[in-house]
Length: 494
Image (tube, rainbow, N blue to C red; front, side):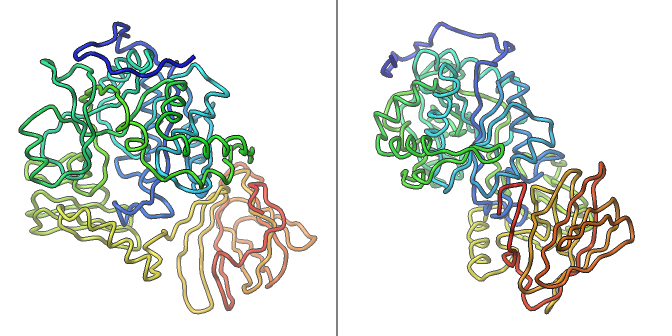
């Protein structure tokens, strides 16, 4: 039987404390991997939101999230993502050697409440005694051990049937974050009940809350037992829970993924804060771990290493007489040089450049939306497109022709397909290609080529042990990616 949550008396911290360095392998991370990819344009786009980008270093933000939870001693994660991103999640998990995880596919994005509800229903079937640690996949933390210690403190409270969230002590009147008002306490580092949630405030309200004290930035991280989560949704969002439960019952295995049923789309599109947290009591655990949601280029600048003048550099970038400025190149072949800049973000990729005042972060998403509305390719995608078998990159595009670089990973196999509007020429640059054209199969080595006529059924595969790289030249009246008729596909896309 699930205990109802009750408002704990002020300053009453549950007595079950765990040492900060104890293993947390009884905690199941639930990593949320949705997002539209607009606030950090041009590095983040709809086809590859920021959690899949290497904004903060050598690993992606998603991979950093996984490693952080591993370092804290948590169990294998459960990923919740949109079906469009399934192979990105799987590929990035494979890249860092992750095993034992589960990837759940949502047919439609419905915000965090539906995702967390689905995770609770799935874990109820497989791990009903677990604690769920819900974490975004696109945040940055500078220090793992303070984070692990905060989770351990929160686990003691969550085990007693409470929902726990985590807050960051603000060091400035930030208008880009939500806030949590905590109950008064003589020790601001102690876990305590929260009083209310505050939406992103204006500058005056943020300054007032900072002066008053008792307010924390909302980190969007939640901890609760599976039973507590299910009871909370049943009490505060029964219609949402009913739709999600049905979608879990309808769920189908799809390769290594679990695809939720279509009823998921009927769930209300609500954040977990509004659906549950604001409607009942709970606890907040303060933590000091160098957290940032990396939601604007200013927050990226604040999280970056800076010189004495406040200049932050990333990639092949350099600045002369620049102050309080972020210069970033996300392409090793593009040099970014800033001269005499103040409070500027200058961000370059291989196909787009953003130059903006660091304080205009909320306008970046609007600019990306305008590009999408006008049909500009850079508004949604990159020249390089990730696929489950590898990736391709557009090198040149003109009237009736397109040139691509294609890389097929060892064991990768494209679908058996044909095209209505285009023919293709393949030239192998490295590795060995297994090529099927009609009923014939042949091997192509380095510097060998083949022609695939318009309408011919064909397939490309890499049966070797090293990556296969080739150049593809397409010619025809229409070169869109939707000009594909699939007959067979090992990745269940046919």
